[in-house]
Length: 257
Image (cartoon, rainbow, N blue to C red):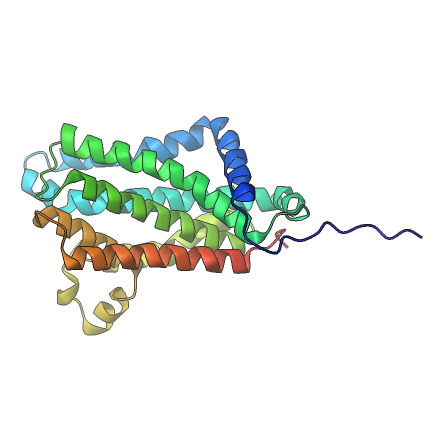
């Protein structure tokens, strides 16, 4: 009896395999206009709605608009990425891919790159709309605002890839939002300064990445230049995104049981 040959497993991260995976994901998304609309148009629509909710109080829009400019992309990228990755696994596509000479790190990095490119476009549209059409008044550079928004969207992508490993259906993937996103939304300092919270809640907020995303946005809102606090917040958000991607690669399963 002839033994079936097992495809050799890759021993190192490959940029070529990562780019191939990213190109495949982007080709699939190109044929999914509803997902594209959710990614690119919904954050812009939410920012516009918020602007006219506070039409009689533009200072309020200035105070929270910058923070939400980072939060909305994070939430949409989390939803789309978690559902898209889970769909790949439940359909068997992920199992077929991992049967090829494709490592988990290549796969996760490819997904992160594809959705990261969409995150750049999404954040650029939302930032341009907020600053130049809706009149969001920021003291710092709009380019710094865009940088934070992109990192926030990448963090949402990383979180979505990570939680998809623990969901058995698309409905369960959506159910992770109250557990992963809502606590961060409540404790990030958007509704009240974190220093005014109960000490226990403030301690929790200090380890949540969205808190530093909001802090970075507020630095751009109120400071004319790059500050040490801003760089620290950026580093924490970026570091959390990389850490979650590594965890996502470690927990990636071929098929949903």
